[in-house]
Length: 637
Image (cartoon, rainbow, N blue to C red; front, side, top):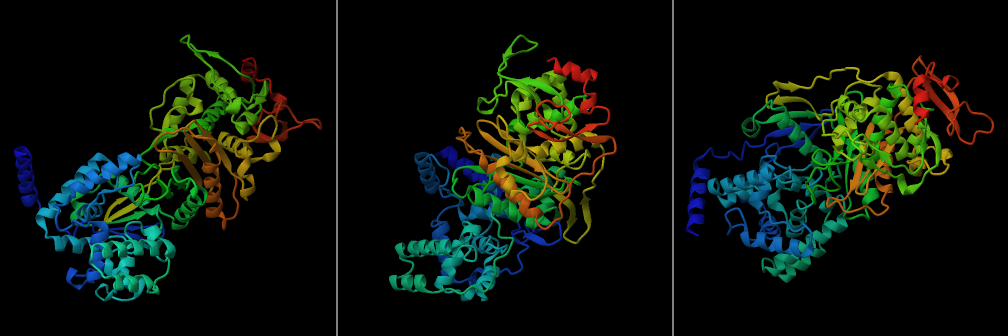
């Protein structure tokens, strides 16, 4: 106990006298989307700051009793509440019960430390402690109420009061105050402009808390619950539950750029111009909500990128930021499954194999160079037990064909190709690599696919285009460097092969992997899915956009035939984003020929061919000239 008191005293002195936090200037940050429209104004970017003395007492009571009942008693941390929440979480085997005080929430928002890491937790605790030592409770509460999110892009209670009810916060009645006090817990869910039913339930819960704590009378409770509220504002596009994931990613990139110090960010302020496309962010969120509405525990990550320049147009690190701040789009690495195969097949095309190259696909045990054996399986143990072409192997995602291609090329070939395409995650040069057994982040994976989508130029996924100080002086500007990495002809051939994954006419001993979403698609896309026991991926593109979607569970539980979700989120996202755009596809290079080909044999199609389609080849490697040296070698394996 004496040790605790000593440590607490030292911490108090350090916090009290070491660089006092200026809450009126901290986090004076503005973020702008791709059209230079503001989508985030830091806690002091708020247009109207109101004194605590001029805020409705009903609003203050509703906020304190619903968010932090012991606000005036604790020193920034409600220890009994922390232990109670931990007990509830352990008992329920969930992490839904939170214990953050108003001071902690204010500290978190004040310094843009949203990432869910121990470093952030420690920083948050330290700033909360400093706030409590340097400011009075009234000053902390005033700052909190003037900076929290009230939905629809509205920060601060005065702005919220004017937006929702066209009146100052000092004039709010109990019904209005209890409605507004309920929003910050989950702005997307509890804004009355988004979901009045949920908002009313939240309001009633707050009024019950006030009644049970004898802050209001039964008569006041009845009057407030029965008061019909009329809202002045209109629903805005900025009220997206996933938008905070984008903001988090911007902050992470800002820190990685190291062009401004944390001290400068806090004290002087910044203007950050980003690649955000609100339409893309909206359709991504809508697709997630629509498809995962009944999958309460399943999580997702999604990213939309412009392949021409690497601009990240939309990003979702989960379903709902208010429920989970972990940003799976930039922080998580998961096994990508068969979505790895296009990188392998590009290497195969570069090394002389063609759309017609055949390998025998049947249950196979491979003996590797080190003497070990490897027995991969096709999905659902379905095999043609016959030779199949590369075209069908891609269409059906045949694992045996992929491993034979991989071993034929050499295990290091795929590693080198992935690195060449910007994948920085550690990749093991082993037999199973084409089946996506290594873990890769969504951000780097979509960037790699963007090279296919732009016909072979290097891409660096990024969110920040420009940074200025608060006066408009340029600090940083992103410069896109266009460098050819892949061959245009081979990317064209590969894109055509990947477009077959949605063609329901190509059903044979199994079905194309993306056939289930074909009816949703109005444009031509190159698509590859990836499935492991724990992860579901869909990555696809056309010249205008690349979309990558991951679905799965944070606790790595095994999937139970939940294969449709990533594909449907992908389809709904890209279709709704490109709906108004004219369809685009790639112009055939001059050195590429199209040949109507029998997909089973790889030869020129005849009237008796059951599966036939135009496939593309570098001139001189068409089916009529199939007996090249490398083709002979491949066919003999």
